[in-house]
Length: 435
Image 1: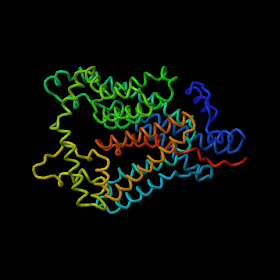
Image 2: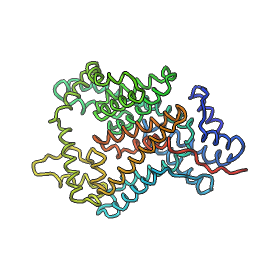
Image 3: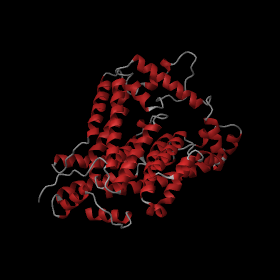
Image 4: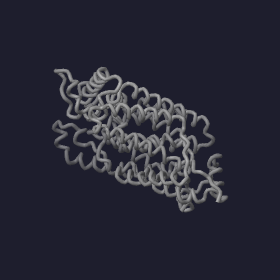
């Protein structure tokens, strides 16, 4: 089974030889000399066979993705119980544990704890991923995952593009008579919601940009994926995705010291001129300060501040923002059509759990950024550089997008983010035992 995985890896890499890191040479020696054969074959291979497709399916199906991930986590737990697996946590995970512990404490004081299950589920999901991701400690496995994600995200983007075209023809008359383009044309493709798709797509684009710049010889093979995903971002009519992808492109050009960085200020104008009329209409509508979505987001920040002011230590309770939202509105403030969350990660976490939990979350993100920067500085080859840069760009994009949307509330986004940011920090940590 391990040989079969290696063969697939070699094919997706194009059979190009590369220098191995010391950790990979050690792992390969352990397997080839017979050390840890049982543990590797029976435990890690089974976990990888479930984990890899679980990550591949993130851009197209939450049900399929989480089913495979559940199998991988179960296999990992069995490996621990049988003494064939071990785990050594990176330093940043201790900060995540502190964040989680404080969140659980705040949840235990909630007057409606059942409403907070969704938030706790996100923590359990992240914990399970942190537990099982070390089986993908080899750079070859990580590249296999990224390439599979590029393929599945392209498939999902094709569905989004097709749906956009169909809706544009179907609702052309309604939009021309004053209907809102975003309301009639936005979709999430196979993920069924534009915000979920946008959160996942930001992380995919982060990986694509870093892969494109790190491996120029691969561009002829992968340019369709970049083109399809780029077109899907444009036609998604999702401002969060537009702004974040433009920022990530600028960061990538700065990393490369590319002269194309000077074209970034002009690029939005060029895209605007070349875009379909409904895309231009969406831009002109959404940049107006009076646009309902803009005014609603400002209102949500004010409501979040009022909740934190009244409940600074424990928040209003996880899952209770929607039910308590209207009670924090002033008499002259309208009720938004949707107010299930505050469209901002920091505001949502602080309002639900209180200031201590928000500070713990901030510290975790800061330490994670520091560790990823260290991983990039100590990269020994371009494979390490790709993984570290993709992690930094994905985390930066996720945090920036979280200024406009509750990206932390999307499970698929958390799955892909966990893979991206943990890849540079985790190595395969199977127990090696002589046979």
